[in-house]
Image (cartoon, rainbow, N blue to C red; front, side):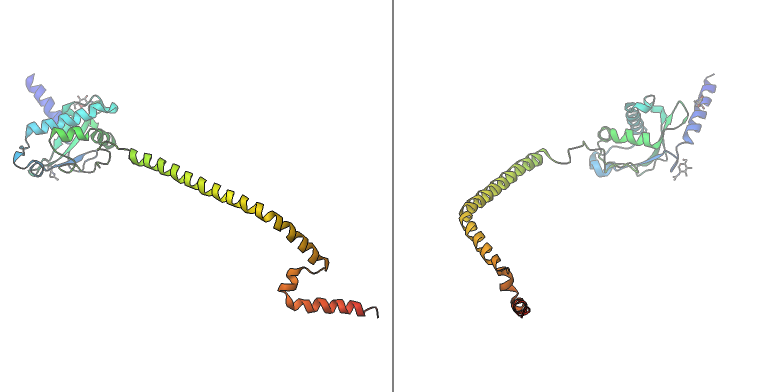
Amino acid sequence: MLGGLLLASACVTVAYTELCRPDAENAFKVRLSIKTALGDNAYRWDATEEYLFKAMVAFAMKRSSSQEATEISNVLLCNVTERISFWFVVIDSSTNTTVPKEDVEAAIRLNRNRINSAFLLDDSTLQFLHISTTLAPPIEPSVPTWLIVFGVVLCLVVVGIVFLVTSGIRQHKRHNKEHEETEGLEEKCETTITMENGIPCDTLDLKAGHINGVYTAAEDERFAPL
Ligand SMILES: *[C@@H]1O[C@H](CO)[C@@H](O)[C@H](O)[C@H]1NC(C)=O
Ligand SMILES: *[C@@H]1O[C@H](CO)[C@@H](O)[C@H](O)[C@H]1NC(C)=O
């Protein structure tokens, strides 16, 4: 009976371990630099640490809604090397297949800080290869609050300056208009006078060459009836 159970569990283990191998579908590589991070306080990577790692991954999976049923035994480690690196997969026990890469990735990302602190490491000394850490740090607003306040104040100041300048210009213009109004009347009279000749002053002044033409034409007309 016990033998049978052991054999069955061994079979399960064998069946499962086939799912965990380097570059397998939905497998992730992890690299740890415990010595780099902790120096003399570095701990030895052993089966207990592996157990903690499996537990942390299971914890991350349980916290994500799609894989709440994940147990520690569903997390498999393989190809653990001396200078510590290994691969892991998460098994979905309802289908006996590996959990899709995207689900594991999302769970790890969301719980990155918890996993890091469990091993006293950070993103550079506990590396999940192929899982970027872009979402790991707490998301700060892209524009700091002080900058927003500063921007609003600056805008108000600019609007104020523009208002003052334009109102000043408008007032100045109105002032000038009142001055010019009398002069304008005189100018109107002058233009009517010059137009009486049939030749505006402008054309006489600017197109001097044409003046002769106009005069000769007038002379021709004068002589025509004769
Ligand atoms: C991974 O481990 C398995 C079994 O221990 C071994 O057969 C395989 O060669 C290893 N692969 C790599 C890339 O180390
Ligand atoms: C998963 O595998 C175990 C052992 O091989 C088996 O007992 C179980 O029925 C399987 N579950 C599914 C859903 O295939």
